[in-house]
Amino acid sequence: MEVPMKYICFLMLLITLGIAGIDGAGECGTSSPDMEATKLAPCASAIQSQNARVSDRCCTQVKKLTQNPTCLCAVILSNTAKFARVKPDVALAVPKRCNITDRPVGLKCGAYTLP
Image (cartoon, rainbow, N blue to C red; front, top):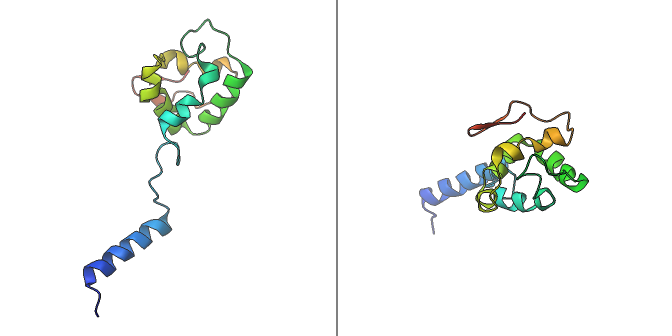
């Protein structure tokens, strides 16, 4: 029994995509921006008010996010962040408030810029 050529071509495409590493990963790798946003729970007050104290736990989580600027933007602009009424301009100032020296200064996240 002969296998139709279109099935062989489709199988080859899947194998090629798998080898190339295209596995559906998004801005935050295999995790969604909404899932990553939940990890910012220690930052709840700091991402809503410039005057709130930024905890060490918050800074640890933010430090991880600043290592992937695309993910950082996706998290700040995620549905979870919107639902939690995160203020993007305040949230993007948290890396500076944490004294993270290797933060991506000038990073554009929609209409907002990381200081």
